[in-house]
Length: 340
Image (cartoon, rainbow, N blue to C red):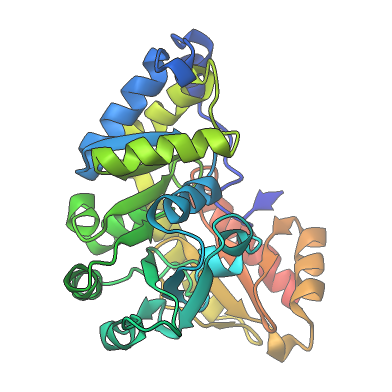
């Protein structure tokens, strides 16, 4: 079975497994787990931030950021199909008590002008704008890289209005690789950033939330409140450190494989690649096959390929560490068989 559902399905490498087995551990709530401490320090340095916090998942990292930056009754500005709005179970309202103000995006990027005009003026009728959120790369925009200039413009607007910015950078290393820029070029334009260790980097679990020392100190308390204060967490932090330090440079392979997959699909009658391939995601319109996405995914499964439905007419394929070039060639043959 060739699994192209998500880059979350990767299995830990042998080096990660050995790192977990040999990890030095301690009580992380007391700050005594050396593996967690090393991961956090390394992540902060790589991301160009003062401090970092190891959290259980990307969703937890995003929600801790919202809880840290906002107070109940605030409003957050974010793109209308962003992960925080679309895929996190309404957690910003359920946990932080904030409401969302969603803006349409162009390949996931909000217009800086739209953001400017969405920041609430001081008025007793309005909620205060508590946070602006950016997602980079943008999942539902097909792994699109949010341009650095767009992030800069939004950040400068936010600073002039004393509003913090959080970046859901679950795949920000993909954005850095896809754009050919150091990741710190992106992180300089955000107050906090969340990075997944368990997607393209291939760790079995965990994410990083990074920012300045004061913010991360407050975030650590929110992590505890949410039940994320783990004890001998080095068992999962050690593979995360391997992912962070060993796996970033191979993300280009996933991008090459996504382009390979897209090129093959473009030659198939009845299928249409609808996104620009910036990184490791390929979105395919299947409506001309007269099948629903769910039906097409089922046919693919019988052929030995796993994918996911992605909206009314589309199916998403995601390349990752466990899929090689020859797997892409096999997948293309199986996708063609499913179309026929």
